[in-house]
Length: 460
Image 1: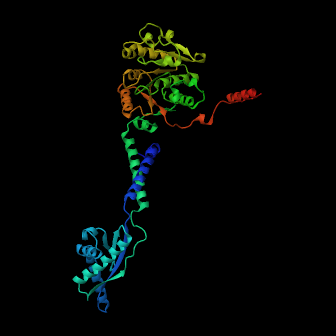
Image 2 (image 1 turned 60 degrees about the vertical axis):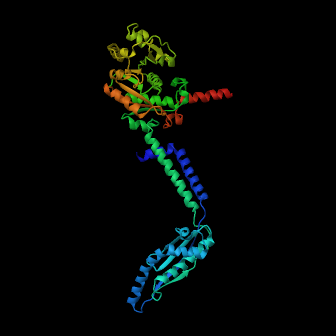
């Protein structure tokens, strides 16, 4: 994954990441609240060695003292010393109760010994530290020659004013950081494990083909699938005009072009894409024929409001001539439509027959572009067979999570198995798309003038 992929995941799943960080922060606060405050007091001892007046004697004495300090550190936390401390202060539990609560350290390259004691009571922590220092001196005097080595208290322990633990800011920061890392990690893991297509990046990583068009997720499309049912200069309409332009660039050889529009699975919006593409081609002055070749679930006739009982099945079974089955639609009859016709018991045989191949060749002599709405690629083999006969296939992929990457990969493999050309991909139902001309309200001036004129007239 690249940096932009990480940023995309963070942007998409920021709510869960923030929630995890807040949970971590709450856990840190809970842990802090449940901890018993501990106070730390420190006493300090100085180790001196009797030496001669010469420089050599002084150097040897200091080296000897530093070596002895290491031994005294172990002696300070020994059961013998801790038991003596517990006995002096009348502490229950003896040396075992003080184990871990008394720590002895020495600053580097010094003959000082720091004895630290922790206790829920600040006064008691100071008493333990001072008693440990006293008992350590007693133990050393018992095992060492006091005429050579001498320990003395350099600094008495005093009761601390504030607890040393828990460290509230540190615990909260660690809890929040831990939650943030867990949230970010789970978001990345979900993105890696999730094989559903949810954005354009997923499509680009799945299919090695150009993106011909991108359409935003619009709930109103289900009720009004045609671009003519809405504002002619809406963002959706402009996106189909852009798709029309991109499709022209796929016609490298020139001449008539037959385009099969399909998808991997049902419900990705292939039919509405095929119809609106044909409408925009006709709007641009292209002689275009729209063919409904989805003989199992035809929808073109219902979307366009035309007769659907006479159509492709009748032509393929020689029951009706093509010119009698083709209908005109739209202002001036610019769009020609061949509906699916009556339901046939053998749609695969009809679409894969030599008659269908001849019919496509005939249509290419009469029209500049033939748009064929085909069934999905995974349930049936019809679209792959049609793709082999046509100039190429436009694959519609829905980016709302209903389609898996494996579905799209298999759909492309089905096309490749019959040497069908994949012209490009149309991404449907994208959550966010780049704003186009409609963002600037780029409409013809005469229409704007007409609106202003009507407004003035109404005001008058």
